[in-house]
Length: 276
Figure 1 (tube, rainbow, N blue to C red):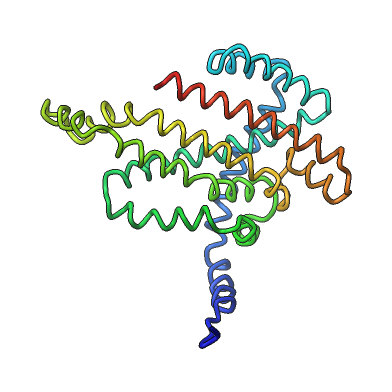
Figure 2 (cartoon, rainbow, N blue to C red):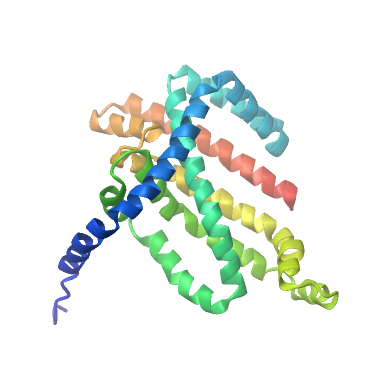
């Protein structure tokens, strides 16, 4: 099948050599803004007493997912504290929630746009496929070149990996609003904006929340991969266990991620059920 050759590697490297010197100042400013937000958020989580954060998490779990989840949260928080990874857990939580926030800010409006315009949907869909199927290690390379190493490139890489569900499920939720409901709202004289805010978004909210739930889960799944580019947190503990061939260290970091994942999953799932 080697009938002709495509010099994709040379083209890509030539483009990188042309692109980065010209646009580095722009990405540097973006990186500074993300770093300012992330550092302050992380410092705030580390400044709060662990007992207060644990109490808040338990109360949120109890109100959204029930007594069983509240009990699990108590056990989980004691576990994270007792194995000495509380600070790392807060660093991971800061990166995951920051990336999730950016994913929602970008993903939900794009999803609404896709639902309102079939041409935009046809353009955005293959881009989302590309973002979800491209191995995450591949886009870590340009992320390092543009943003260096540390928490900022981790947020960017996590954002790229975790945004597609927010777009897809927002698009799906709005398209699933029954046509007779839309027609009734139109018959009462609703404008396009009123239709979206008062009819379509409220009815699509459970599906949108399901998308946010998936976004958070994908963001957490990037915790270990992001540690390869210097992201602090539980992923770096797992990576330390791998490099030192220390099963115990890897298990401590891995179970910490599992505890956070279960709590965040059940809480967002519980919010979705209450809304629906």
